[in-house]
Image 1 (cartoon, rainbow, N blue to C red):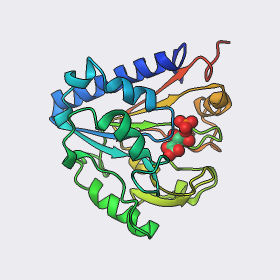
Image 2: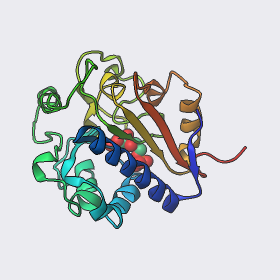
Image 3: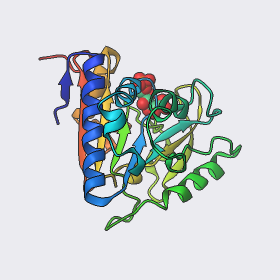
Length: 239
Ligand code: 6PG
């Protein structure tokens, strides 16, 4: 597998936004709604900010988009560490996704298992079509330096989950208390896009592209969907 490679962070934001917009437009044109799961961490900020500006700000069918998160830190939604806070500030507060179609993970739930089950119930509203799982039109993912993705970390038993849609986990990366999509849910998506930036991700990206099974991100293989990686040159240098 070869990633789409762009020169730097600005180009990564531009091209990621373009790819995301493409999926949104085709989902809405083909089926009406678009079910989108946003990635957390810092990398996607540039793409979210780019989508909040012309031509995408007014040019995309935002009222048909339903927004979820592929993982979340169990901190208040206005906490700077919150993946919701990142996406709200950079994108969702600036485009016309109806509030009823923005689905933050239930971080107020004190019990992780209760929170995971509650979000799984929210996901049940997403059409499955022929899939045994809710089918997202696009799931955005980041990549950790240890090969984690969403909040699926190496060695975590959540990697073995075959039934639940969402799991509560203790992460190696602070903050520790998190909720994450499981692999069956991720692999049911019509399209998965990894956005990878920076030299720190070079080794993990290499390992994932050669499917090193020790890396959780290597286990993302959409059953009937498209898998793409977009990276800057620092994360995927020539040669
Ligand atoms: C999170 C993420 C996580 C992230 C990677 C990369 O909540 O932290 O979902 O999987 O995507 O750790 O993080 P950066 O983009 O900050 O490098």
